[in-house]
Image 1 (cartoon, rainbow, N blue to C red):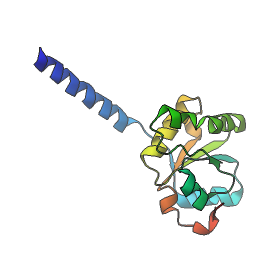
Image 2 (image 1 turned 45 degrees about the horizontal axis):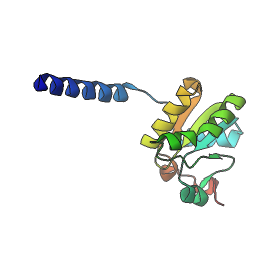
Image 3 (image 1 turned 90 degrees about the vertical axis):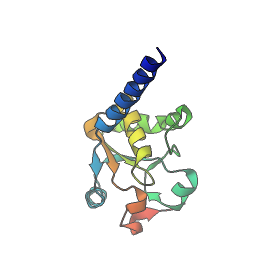
Length: 140
């Protein structure tokens, strides 16, 4: 019986990992995002950086959430003002995070679960860390 439970547990964990790998995300490359910014394209920028990083560098008009790493219910709730803003705007939504990795993916998934259409959701590839146009960032 214990052996069956152990095998079942391994199978469930494996299936959960497979599901996470199969989930896909829309990314926007830095140069394409720069063109969007330069053109004045209407979009909502959801910045999940922690407070001190946001203070050092962020995009003008981005929504500060301080929700990184978006792992707890409390951190997900910090995204709710951005959800409301994105729904009201009805435009594309770009998730900005330190490196464009796990935190951005969790934010993307949360926004999607809250009703933001996936075709309007994007993650800035590489996040702020790999943003090559530092002159476009602002600080507080």
